[in-house]
Every structure is written in structure tokens, then in C-alpha cells.
Length: 177
Image (cartoon, rainbow, N blue to C red; front, top):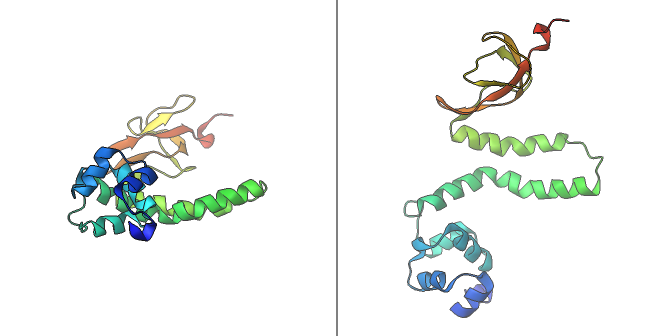
């Protein structure tokens, strides 16, 4: 606390906007009872990362609360996006004519995270596939199962579990002129 210029728990409470209950939990060493949001606020006020805070408080990766482990792992995957996106957004605001092409690499962390979680895309946007009402949602027109359709919006599955249906339209090559 001292390295952050905080010399009392009252000062900590004021600067972090933590409740008296949360401050009491910290004083009693019952940090595992704190909400994730409180831990994040505390780490910000102390100018250290959440991981450093938890380590200072005696937690290792094995003894961290499950929610903290999950969120830390997620943040590790998303770190490049979290660090670079605000800069890119600022550049776009200053120059609206800026090409969107630099955005594409920023989404690789999300793809890595989805891969880590075992979440896969049903088919890429623009792909022509056979219509399967079990995994596709038809946006317009009518087609029979097995007819060619074009993926307009991706769908996702995790293993055999369907998360989101892919949204499709009849394939332009299958429509009569």
C-alpha cells in the first residue's frame, strides 16, 4: 500500500471505493471472499496487476479462486487486442478514411481464445455448403435440406454442442434467373 501512496485502510477504502465489508475482508486475510470486481479495483489503486496482487496475498496459480484463474487466462489471450484496439480506434477517429484492413490481425487473439475453448466455426463467411436446418438458419427464400446455401454469418459449435446456427441464404448459383 505504501508504494502506491496509501497509508491506511481508510485511505484504501476512499481511493478504491471498496465497501467496509471488503476492506474488513482484506484486513482479515479473507481475500477469497472478495468479488472479482473488487480485486480489480484494488489492483488498479495499488498500481499492480491482479496476478501480482494475488501473489502478494499468498495465492499461487493453484490456490487462486476459479473465477480469477479463468479471467486471467482469458485476459492473456485477449491482451494484444486489449492493448492495440484503443490505439487503432483513436487513429480511426482522427482519420475516418483509414482502411479497415489493419483491424483483421487484431482479432487473432479472439480466434486463439475460441480455439483454446474448443469452439469452432461451422463454415466461413462466403462458403457454399449444403443446407442443414439443424445447424443453419435460413435468412431468406426457401431451400430444401441438401440444397446449396451461402454462409452470410458464421455459426459456432463446441464439440458436438451447437452454440449458434450459421445464418445462410440460397446460393446465388442455385437460384433461377
